[in-house]
Image 1 (tube, rainbow, N blue to C red):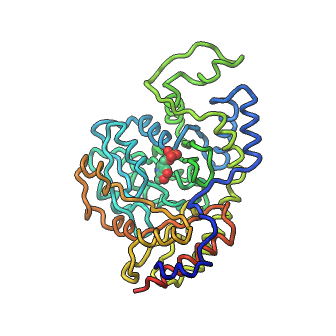
Image 2 (image 1 turned 60 degrees about the vertical axis):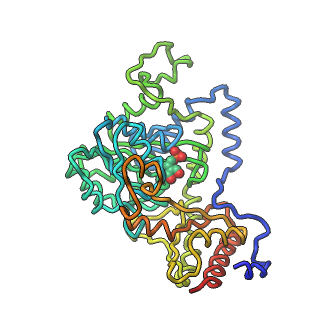
Image 3 (image 1 turned 90 degrees about the vertical axis):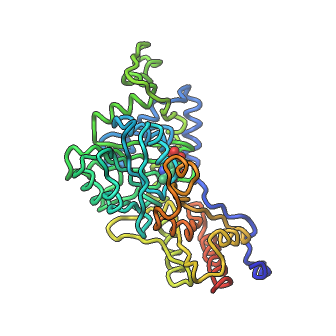
Length: 404
Ligand SMILES: Cc1ncc(COP(=O)(O)O)c(C=O)c1O
């Protein structure tokens, strides 16, 4: 490879990061307004953000919290999940999805994914035991899982569905936004909530932040109380003229509330979200076109019945057709001044889950084979078309120079 780096004009002058947020002047002005307002923690801007997020997703209730991790955890606790219970989680996810299950005292049961990287409904069904209480599908990379299949399984077995939509703000399934009440309308009384992330690298960001949507009134009330110490309703108002000093603790809650500083960012990021998604989809189409027939590269599988908001653009390398492995491929991208990443190291390959639950390599083969060959390429609205072309050229160069 190093020989080909002698073609120095192919090396970018500056490093292209794997991900960057797009923060505009409106966000900055809104944060400054918040700072000057005297009200910096949970307050009117959080309320505004929640209302706008409800409207955007088609969810009757939205609760802002300080991360997706907090959103997932709060939901599990509100559902009453605890010791002795099992929750089904795909192994190809970020550790937060499973760790929050452990924090409740329950056990995450890791299952395999399909060739599309999404949790396999068949694997879910096979993992259900009398102790199973919930399924946590992850809308990997910003494409929806097969929700109809999953809601149907959950309904049939009386399980809750806690959707990890960390990647999927703006994603649709059969024309409805992830998080929408309507998605599960055919399954009355299905207990269901959706958790979003506004972490720095997500499709919209509040620095750190998250949101829970649900159609379930009782669940929403519990989650709201749990997300602020377990204080009785609207406790945050107690310092305003509308509020009272009095509050009651009705549960041992958490400190998971979102600040108005974060919501100030969120209000404007949400307004710009569709534009962000459009840019991501346009760049993904450029990658698809360039890599469609490329030696040793497989482009992401996109299902026709759901949109893909491309939080990630994760290619697979056909390792039989290359003389290098995935890690060497990423190293060569880096030498060409291009960042890349891997999503994800399957949870069952990490020492903690192996030691705690006895998982080992070989248990979940599809996720392992994806892990060995997957590379997430840079994809975000702040990239220029020239940046996208640089990535394309780099991938073309590395695959041809290391052809088997
Ligand atoms: C699939 C998935 N779930 C959950 C999270 C946690 O999100 P947060 O950082 O907002 O807690 C992430 C973060 O990257 C993620 O990728």
